Image 1 (cartoon, rainbow, N blue to C red):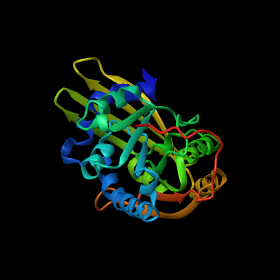
Image 2 (spheres, rainbow, N blue to C red):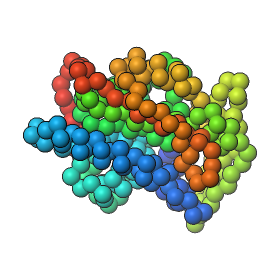
Image 3 (spheres, helix red, strand yellow):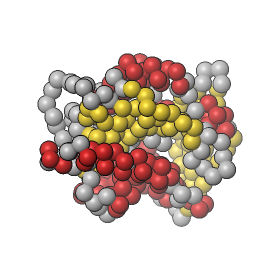
Length: 276
């Protein structure tokens, strides 16, 4: 019998997630994302410095929404010791793994979900959301709420950067069965994409630590680009660019990379509440 995905799935995945991501010679997706993201962050940091951001006493800041076990943040910290970095995730189990990693004490880790306002306001120069974080949202109203929450934490003039699995990605990657294994664990993923309802469905079966295997149902949704663009504009962002992205070598551009900016004259009522 399959269990509902979400918190239960990621609680089961958390202890083996990093091993899974690096299994069979794979490069963890967080590091693939980091290689694409780092030049953009560096450009934004230089631009902020040129505008006199240092005079305000605020260093460059980045929030990773859906940070999981913190691999992306750890790689950024190793390259940028002075940036203020934070991660947000709905899974306490994933955050617990992130908190045990080297340099985690220099990164703010916060538990929160996308369906309600975050516990800080206008706090970050760039906010990112990667690895299907937004594809998990169930419907257009949830996407609108998520963008409103994300808008509230970006400083005026700052960026929201995210990826989405697009239609080509769902058709290419959400099909058939894939098996992964390592010392003391096994993961099986059986996936299919329903093109009529634009929903990806996967059964994820996990066996680890000698415990009986458990199966979870995972749903993700294709979000059409026009709908995403309209939702961003409604939240107050201006889309700077979108581009197809093939995160895996010699594969299709199954991801769409989005960069949207919050106009510098944006404002919001409420206090500034900055995480460490």
